[in-house]
Image 1: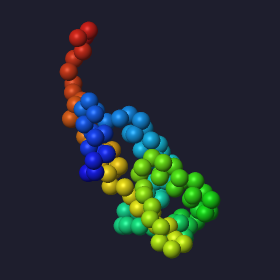
Image 2: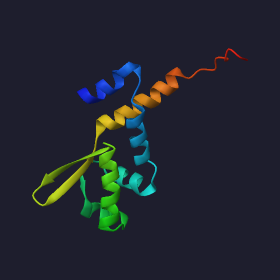
Image 3: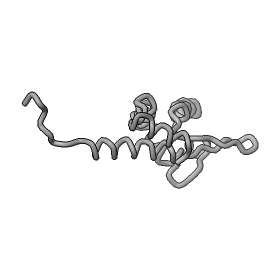
Length: 113
């Protein structure tokens, strides 16, 4: 994990809701899920995404923008090509948040019951 991710995890023992919210929005669209799954094996460029999804370049760019703004993917330019890959730190942030929910949920009765 990088320092930013660790800082987010340590802030008051809780993960920032704004960061989780942006990440969850990234997962809320079937096309974005498809794009994310294409990156499981490594970097992809828009031309690869176009071939594999039959989406237009403009539609892919829209979804890439949302994924980048959430911090779920990062990009790398090589010549005139831009390659996109998953940001492992963001995935770990989601994992930590979900695990914290699982670890902290209980079947305790509330005081008013």
